[in-house]
Structure formats: C-alpha cells, structure tokens
Image (cartoon, rainbow, N blue to C red; front, side, top):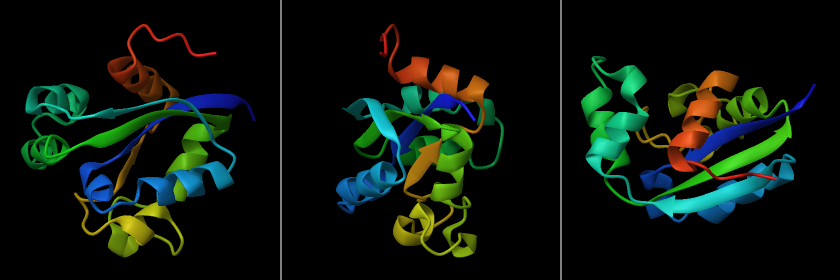
Length: 139
C-alpha cells in the first residue's frame, strides 16, 4: 500500500444539514489526513466543468444544478490507499443500497443528494485536486 491523495466534497445537502463535523470526524477516525480544505459555492458553470466527464448523461443537468445550489466543503485527503478506502467508507452512490455505517447510509437522502463525493482513480484525483486547488503546493 502507498500513501495517496484523493479529493472529497461534502456536498451541499450534507453541509445544509449540518453534517460537516460528523463526516470529518469519521474521516479522521479512519486515519485520513486533511491536506487542504476550503468552502466553495460553485457556479453552475463551475459544477459543469467539474462534472464534464458526465456531460450528455441523463443526470448531468440535475447534478450540476444541485452542486451549485449551496456551499460545499472540498478537501484533499491523504492516507494509505486513500482512494479505495474513501470509496468504501462513502458507500454506494444510492444510499438505499449503501452498507450500514457508510457515510451515504448515514447522511445521504437520495441517489443525487448523496452527501459526499470521492475521486474514483488516481488520474481522476489528480484532475479533481487541481480543479479546486490549482497551483497549491501540498506538503
């Protein structure tokens, strides 16, 4: 195993519901280190740019609208095998199918309002980190 970086977003639904602290506590208890963090309020254009890989899919428009509906917390996490471990802790996209104790089972309400985003591969993580933290030198 190696130390990796991944991007996570506590989405507008979880921010509005007051779950930032709850989610961070779970991440830290799972040995993730927060290397960078900032609150953002994405414009629709910024959300569309971030999710450009999904352009043309049926959910693209509603996802972009949702992600620009309120503040979100973006973070760079570091840890052993961070990408795969975060995705396991997040749970499946649809909270109805997520395993007990996962972030989405605990805090998500629908397949779209699913509380948290996490990079799915090293290449994706590199793009996503640079999208929100361009030029940031992480130690």
